[in-house]
Length: 458
Image (cartoon, rainbow, N blue to C red; front, side, top):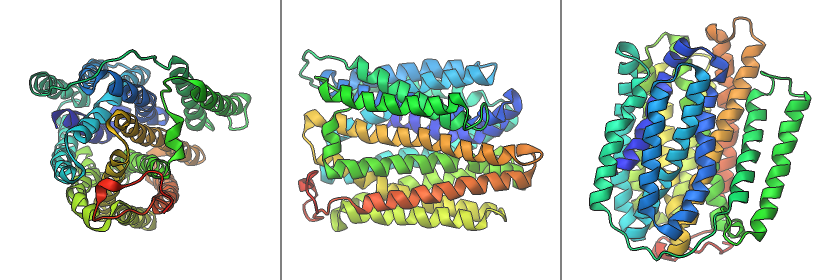
């Protein structure tokens, strides 16, 4: 729970500090990279950690992830320019790639499906506390100290997690020889890097129809195809392709991808939108976004009760319906900013995420044996991280394209409203497509949740 708190605090505290970071370091057009590079590093490392977790155990990888995360946090805190901060965030993402998947996998190992409905509530409470403490601390640091403290705060929490993990958690692992799929890891990293680079910098650093833009998109697509071919022949692929042959795992992964994109789109742009249009302090603007992270664990606490009664699929569909309604509400009122309305929409969206993320993850875990659970959990987190990375890149490209055509750029509130409207519209489209994917989940029987099948057609 403490390790989860480390990741939860980082996810809620940074968005509040973005206006102060941009004011100090400049490069507003590059601030989406603070999220993209972090999420890209997390995404490409999750499958590797997930595979190693089934081979060498969960505990060593979780300790490594926390250690790397703390070292990177120090580098972020002392960064003197936006490029340096971006690089440090990339290292932080490599550490985060181990933290969340390992904590969720451990929960899947030691608790039954029925018990997880209670454990999800305990884990959700960590996110609930962080959702309030994170933006509050971020706002206080930015107003009275420095944005750099949003990274220094990770150190005591991370060290506490290490001490507790070493003393309290013990596991029995059957060690065996294994082969790391370095070719697959390299190809996946290169492919996603080129694609995100093309999406985020297209229309900014170079024209969309320039050779470098077209080459980056084409190169990323080609490398992705080569990655798939390599994975088919790999003895221990970093991302086993059998995952994509099971309907339940495919639909839950698509759901995680879409949810990751929507979440980062909202939390990345709403604070700046409120600060620039309403003249709010970073603290107040951050608390509005905290409603997402407060609603999520609140709903996740009851998600277990829901899916035990009405099934995984219906619970997840209900959750995504709330997300669609919330994002539509933001789109409808973006031209007339209101702190109360934005906060309400964020709360509803967070509740929707809580009702959809929990049942899809538990359903995926319950459909496979122990030796596949790490890979399945990692794949779900991988999909969420890739969705977040690609999503924030697309949102950044949309916002930058709108601001580039407007006189005054992001400094004029009317221009920022237009850019935010573009971001919200894209998020609404992604939310609807994600709802369709969750609707396509196999039907399950709520009376016997442990029997969910990943191969059933209905």
